[in-house]
Length: 204
Image (cartoon, rainbow, N blue to C red; front, side):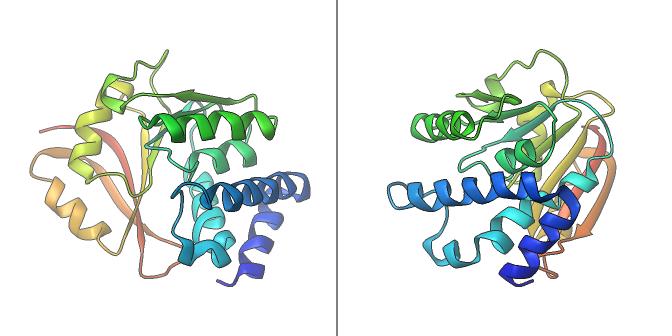
């Protein structure tokens, strides 16, 4: 997917006003990446494909209503993208102080009132109610994510976990300790990458 194709994909699905806000976020992300390592410099010229559309593709997979928790939100991918393109309540869980502050200031600059930033590890985060959706992009192996965030979920929670080329092997490696319904969805932005979709996750 080219940059133009990625931006057109976002525009067609979420509308011009939200695309415009997303473009403002892209500008903030580029500027801040010159000061701290938010995203790889090699991906700055492909920000719509590699980061924005790549994050936005999770939204159609979240077929339940309710709060969304993004683990290790870092640069805001996918959490800030989700909050820009939807009206969902999104909690960005980020333990690194500097990045948590970036998330707060960016959400404020973009006028996002559906964002909460929790400057903590997911293991110590205490949500007001279970998450309908949990996402994590390039944070930790599946078994660590399940173990660390299970207290934030209930039986209906959907986990949306981009896992690159190792998606299938990570699912297989996890089945010995965790059970549930697992599916790997091909990424629209990188056909050889997969998104793990998990439901009913619980220890064996």
